[in-house]
Image 1 (tube, rainbow, N blue to C red):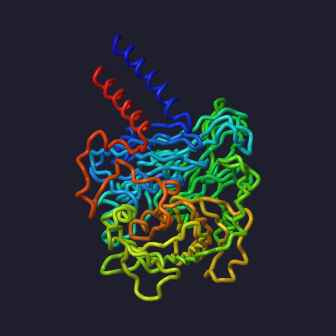
Image 2: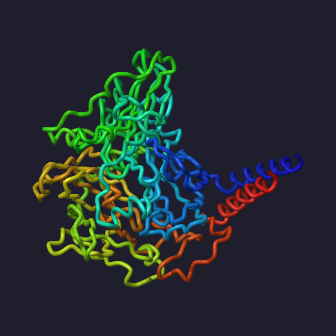
Image 3: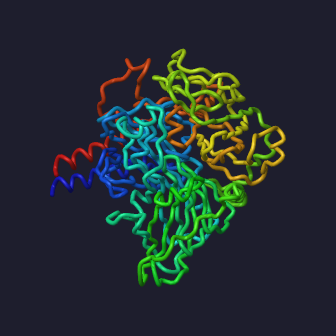
Length: 593
């Protein structure tokens, strides 16, 4: 008992220390142990990546301007990086969790991320970014709430629900399974199903769904309104999301409040996140289906690739029954989904993470300084291997991360020669990077000449989706741009045989990944980086390299053996002291158990 009295006094001391050191923006601490577990999402036991023993992993729930500290323990048998998709690491691409900025965390090592979610709100997610690992899990939700003084543009919901949807294979991500197929030049083939919060489909049809599969049940109270955050964390399949007999009032997407519109269903593409307000206004004669079904595929063959969960009213009188609610019937109308996407507009009158209205940023009146047309095509053979390309270049990850090479002036790691227009000659393997101009305003046209849907993501930024259409983009296409209330987000879809145009203000210094979110094409090289450098080096535009930076490639000789300091990414003496004290508490509790 004496030990626990001492421990209690120690905790009080730390609380006082926190108030002294961090009277400004609060810190939120998380411990992630990333490991393999055996699970059966589709009824077949398989190796799954868990965070703290859970699949999906725990939700990170913080508030605007919080400093987030995540200590990651890699218990996998291969290297690891965690990427915070859509969460903008302002002034610190060092914490981005992709190979262009970070050396991988070796197996059995700790590494601590620390970044501030400054001037952000919204619904995001995290996932492992290396080795096709997201196909085996390791993902979870990341929520950033408004500060109390900033109103949200709707009544406070009665609850907050996270739903993670995605296509799923019963083969795992490794070199003996999914990666093996890609390395051998093969397609992955049809997924084995769609999981909802890591679970398989409810048995709505005994022919399509075998018995014994665990499914997700979401319990709600009648008459209440919930904020339902839906993330497509899958591999490459666009999914249509719907809830039987319930309207989806769209309210937010990846950090931007939207003009509120009702949908009976919405297409959510790989890597995208949406928030809906859903009122439980139906009678409780039965439960209701929650459905995520594949889009832009041969639906007759893909019927078994459907995720089904259950919405359960607390006073429900029976099980869900009948056929699933219909998906959009647009087999002969390829513009339906695109028009739905165009209907998603930015709420320019709502406050964001800041007191000033979001709409005060008039993106349509800013002069464009740089234009890049990025074209993708189906995979092709380069030097005897099947590769995916962007503008004729298949990206090769260097052994020394780009940001690290810049810091230590390592020559020959990459080239600042990514073409502004697609190459006309033979495709090639390159570590070719876009040279962005600090405080420039870049227009990027994403041209999809593949036969399948793609989504594209830019780290470190929210960009404005200003236009999309079928066919080839031309200079005249600018006449169709939405220059007032195009949604600001970090992930956008590009339809097959179509283009999407985005505008981005290059105000975040660092090296930022621009990629397809389709894991198979990303794995095969369909990505690049945008390098944004302030010619006047200053800590006001970019944080210094963290004390716990990992070294690899040409800088491998600088890596020290791991010790307790390797678990500290925080800069500033007060932060280091606090984190050390927290580590000591953890050790003390372990010793006295």
